[in-house]
Each structure stands twice: as structure tokens, then as C-alpha cells.
Length: 105
Image (cartoon, rainbow, N blue to C red; front, side, top):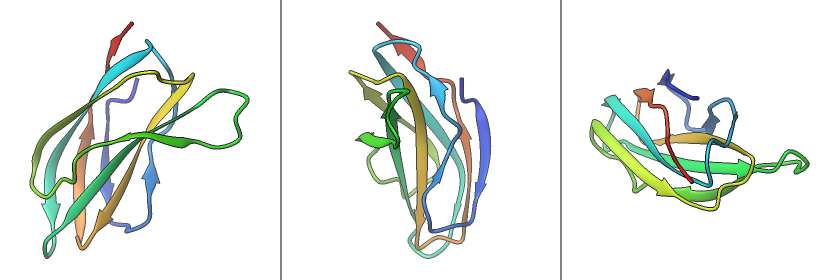
């Protein structure tokens, strides 16, 4: 699944590549390694859709992230395809490790 690293400098939403769902629910985790700027806030959304859907919708959001560290979010009732989307506000840049989700049936 995900397990990737991002260097984020944009204030626009930046999604990961989508992957097929591995269970009806999952614990998603991100490791924020660096978060630079004046009062930076990183928003992380879990988005999903079925294959026949034309667009993703937000199914859950992490609490606003303002400091480096690991953040997790449990999400249930996932559709067929999932991805994470990152938006950096008031920050210069962020270094993010996206960890593999822990799937739950």
C-alpha cells in the first residue's frame, strides 16, 4: 500500500496515489518528520471512492497537525479505492512519511 515519503511545499491539496482497499476499515498513520514555517498546520484527509465513481470524497480527517510526530486515524466503511490528501497552511514545507495502513475486516 502507501509507504511513501513526501516533501510538501504547496498550500493546495496534494493527494497520494490511490490503492485498493485491503479491508472494510483501517488505521492510517503518517509520520511528520519536519514541519517548517510560522504556525504551520497540516491537514490530512482520508478520501475514498468506488471504481465507477468519478471523484473522491473525504471519509475522515486527522486532527490538525502542528508539530512533528506520528498521527493516526481509524476509518471504517471504506469504499473500493482509498488515498490520503495533504494540505499545508501557513507553513514553508513539510517532510512526511506515509505509513502502510493496518487493515481491519
